[in-house]
Length: 74
Image (cartoon, rainbow, N blue to C red; front, side, top):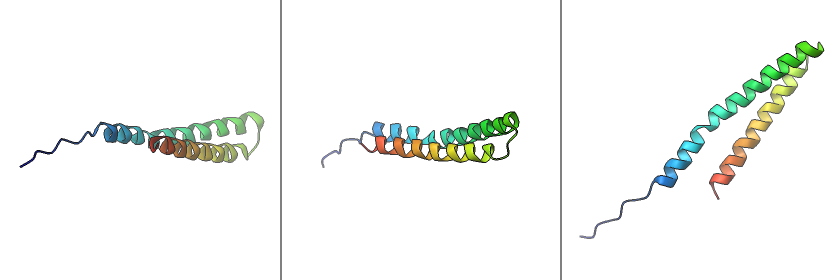
């Protein structure tokens, strides 16, 4: 009976660890964008900057996630 070589899971573990931080990074980017927008609303006495900056932060975080996933698949 031939013995099978154990699988090398180091790459799988590295990818899983890298992907586990994506949710935290995404949440932090959106939260900081919201804080920046709220601060800009108060500073410039406007009402639309918080929504605008938060939306930009959402798109930025989605771009960063897609970029990271593409790099992991190479």
